Every structure is written in C-alpha cells, then in structure tokens.
Length: 161
Picture 1: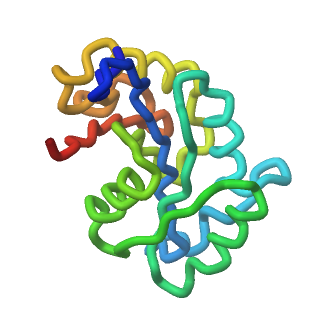
Picture 2: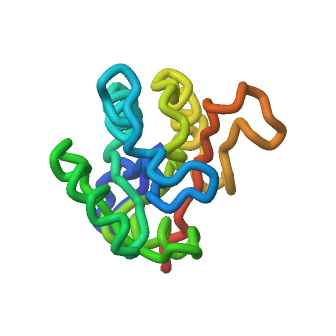
C-alpha cells in the first residue's frame, strides 16, 4: 500500500533493513567481524538482505563508541551506509536510522543472524505493506514461529502530521 502525498501522487513506503551491530559483545567481543566462509558476518547479512526485493535500503546501525570505528570502515568498504547512535538506547539508534534515511518502517536484523532469509523478509514486508496503518509490529519471534537466527521484526515509524 502506498501513501498519498499532498499532490495526490502515491508514494511507496520506504522500508529500511537495519543491521544492528556493535563490537562490544559481552559473550564474544568482535563477533560481527568474525568470518564465515571467508566473509564477515556483516558481509554475509548485507549480501542476503541485498537479495530482498521488498527492502528499499540496507543500513548498518551501530553505536558512537570508538570501538565501532573499524566496523563503520568495513561497512563503507562494502558500500553499506552506516548510522551511529546510542550504545544502550536501541530505540534512539533505530529512530535515528529512520530519520536520517527517510524510512517509513525499519526491519530490525541482529548481526548475529548471518542466515537471515531474504524470502522470509520479503514476505513479512508484504504483510506490512498490505496494511501499514493497521500494523504496530510484524514479527516472527512473538510468539517464536521460526528457529533462532531467522529473527525478523518490522517496526513502522509514526511520522509526525
């Protein structure tokens, strides 16, 4: 479903996939830069999300902490835009992604899910786009309906009137 503009022209909703990542994992620091088959986890996820037909942009969402400078540089080398926000406040970080990149909805993908399924992401985005004003959240984790590692959440962004 599209939005009406002030001129009556329909505008497609901008759906952004945000890869939520930071280097400071308590259990395994630096895990997002670990390699799988010669690719970093970030690269694996970005490549899989690039295969989505319903996703308009893929962004790396990390924190302003200096330990994430290398992560931002790696994202840039992959052509992956980056947003840096609060370390602890994910709502602020995700909201910043939506504001900076003019998003209408955010797909939250954690950086420890390198097998995210592009077909599943697209199917869930279609659920959102089918009735964007009637959806507060599209998720497959509450209740959990897919195995861990295939976690997807789509969060609509309420634009001010």
